[in-house]
Image (cartoon, rainbow, N blue to C red):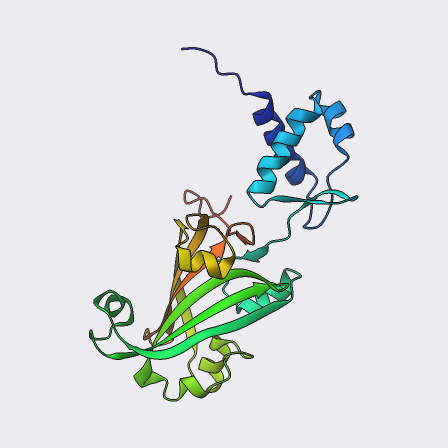
Length: 246
């Protein structure tokens, strides 16, 4: 078998990624000058810039005129510890905003009946929202909730209050747990128009089913998130130790 030799730009890309991790570079912080990195790693500037361009295209880095290349600021979410969009955004240093695109009643589909335990044709609320970070679109979601459990939901202030807050304070639900499924998808033309992305662009798809304390499904939500605006992290534990940890 032939020996595999990485291309110089692949080596530069790995070194950039390793530098960010080793130096715990935080969002907004700058990389060292290109000249210094080239000298330290023994590569030419064209190779380094090629690696930087790839990380810019993936949303990991961004260039600031006259201020070098910096680590992209992204919304950090942990599927293990769900919180409202606004709370997570503030914690990540963003100014969040939510635009209610529509709220209406719709018939439960056969697909949604599996998650919400409702018969096909029963009435659901459909809430479509656009989430913004520092005035830039980041996520678009569609949430479905049983209308019989939430009378008058359309009259609540969903623009300025989180849906979870309304469920707790107005309807006295105590949300127990959510099942989260994360995958990659490609945005449709409609999603791309909302998120300011070309149709077919890669994005995160997050499907969440939330239950009350008695196990009653309260919400099915499908979220499409820009990969350059969102960072998903979760702890992992080894399963072959007594307490499940290393």
